[in-house]
Length: 176
Image 1 (cartoon, rainbow, N blue to C red):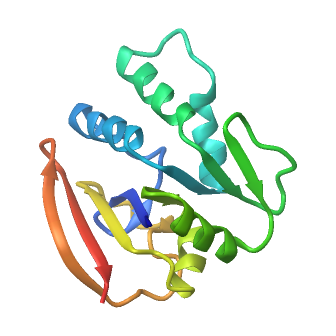
Image 2: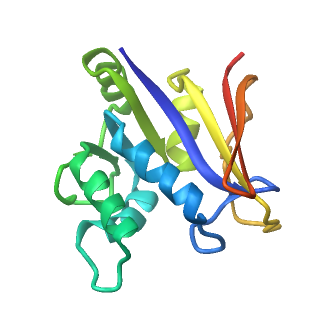
């Protein structure tokens, strides 16, 4: 049975913003290994559109960027959107009944399936479908933006914490 995990980089004050801060070398290596080991990913539209950057090689990429892109491209992706009409390679568009999709993936696959996007995570949290939350705190205060928890905060229990690189702390929680 697969485990559904919602994890993202966020500021100390709880906001996600892929343009305000980026992972250092150690955290980027962590993300490469993490993505390589996934059974798949479920994306909300906004995060998926950002991640489409990895669909095509860029001349300026470092070897690590190419390695991440290869890992990302190889995994199956499900994109939850009512506005998109198509998605890229190795991706499936999901317009309706996200709960049924997640329940099916949990029973049919083994390993971890990540959820990316605070709004998508909110809807799955409301349905009790997220098994673990991973918060990657960066030493940045944004003061505003898209919050990691887009809805009511679920009751959580800390199960792990670790330092990644010199300045990012990952806190892992399960529903209490």
